[in-house]
Length: 206
Figure (cartoon, rainbow, N blue to C red):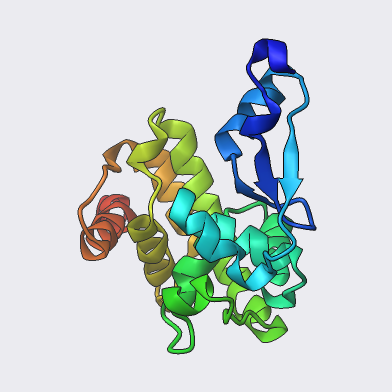
């Protein structure tokens, strides 16, 4: 290992559960090279202060925190990941819809206080599946994924489809006919207005 630059004096630091505290980039470099790397276990690191230590080195993203809390046994975070996986959707969609809940906050998510119950699953399942159908279709007709991906779009689709006078099958048919009229918008309101136009456009001619 020393021949390719991985010296004992440049070891990575891990906790007793082999979570990397310092040396993420060196670890990834060694992994790409298919070689081992020296490490040292710091017995003073706990699950509670692991996030703070990593934030000092490389600030953790929400997905890092969710993965961390699920791995140390927080059932709410694990339920979130399992639920999203069962629907074949990004977990961020679930968080987008939960952002309407008073009990949900980014601060709580980051600090390990996030709650996701079986009741939440049942309330969101149908809404998320309804969102997935037009979203997947729009991704097929738009080569640039950044055009359709984003929180504003997800919330707009949910709010639009939750209206009592909106029929999902009819909306899907309108997208198949007039999906080329879909464009990236700046706000949830603008997305909803665009969906309304697409939904009603052909009905004016029939």
